[in-house]
Length: 168
Length: 168
Image 1 (cartoon, rainbow over the protein chains, first blue to last red):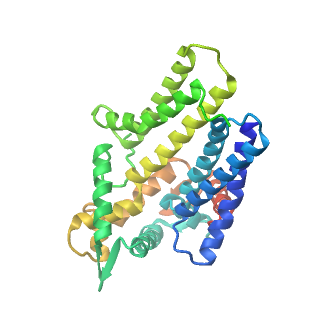
Image 2: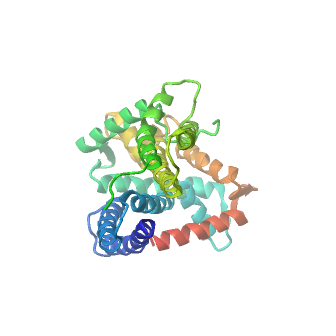
């Protein structure tokens, strides 16, 4: 029964999360999509636990939490995979064309630079990068974050190219 | 409410906490090259350890405890994979670290060159296209790119996931 409560809470999360994402976008809330997901997860988990305590006499927290966290993480995994993937943006760009083909040069010279500019916009909006005339520089917050990312990459033995290594 | 985890759940919680530490250790082993191989090996290691623990831990087995432990461990692996892939292959994060590393303001073209460490966005586009072509989602013929039937199916799935998660 505790599993069922966790499952219901996960379904509630899956229903609530897109609604809140849409509301956040429509009302231009200054919350990153991942923060909206985190808030929704905490709220649905707390409601789920309260619901479980009220209706299940021997409510087992970890049974409910395991299936809830698995469901939420599966959702976050899918969300992360489709939200900002460059490869999938290229694929969607091809699939949405009327003839479903595109010259390689068009993707390389037009679509990818457009994606690049979109990402620079995200960094500027997030206060991590500032534009000075036609040039760009990392802000103090951006420098701190870049330094933290660099330390983590070194600790985990990750290179700093961001490219896929097909030699693996 | 019973807040105490069962034996398999406890094992899964401990292995979940140990996974990032295991990845830190694997980063020190030069024979394990590549971020992708390291995260796969880390996940495989904790799954094997969990299976061994489920067999070796004394006392009666409860299916709900083992299934719940598996859910917890899978959640931890997905979370680690999301964070690890952001660090290893995150486009936006790498843009930030490239700009911070430059130390002075850059034009958009210089930023792209700094990101590609001497290359240009064409190299980046080819890297991402290699993934799409290698996975059989896109084909290239006569200098034109086109999605395959598999690519179109993935594009439809991506659109569905984007719609159902509130990404539009």
